[in-house]
View 1: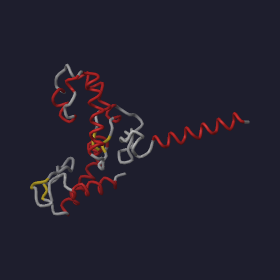
View 2: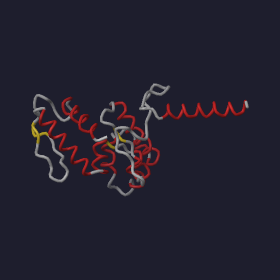
View 3: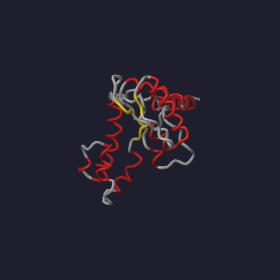
View 4: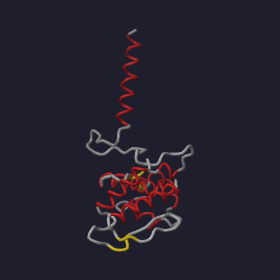
Length: 187
């Protein structure tokens, strides 16, 4: 009887540990952010998961520290697999610097599942129709906030700013608010 109670207690502790480990990215005991494999903000994985679908998704509301942590994890893999020349280079430019050289292709292949991908790019890659719809809604929102915008691309719906006005550039609060509003609807 005592053994049965201990087994249930151990099971309860394990379940609590799993739930705590799958939280929404709260700080861990060391004070850093916990990296998660899936994000409530990201597209849902399909039955067959490729390397690109294993990549961590940078949430729209991610802090700069969270973004940097994800890029650092990819860089650490590149350094481990390819050497110290990969250290200290900004993640986005790393592949452009070495991606065409066949010497580095195996390194990038080994670390492909750790390269961060932003939410919008993931949606464009995994669901082009939903992405085009989201771009259309984003266009309407941004235009409604009186930003000067280019005409959307016919195939993707993507657009940019035609002029930087008093509201700011693409990284301004108004556009970020539109992105959060538009992409929250797609969950």
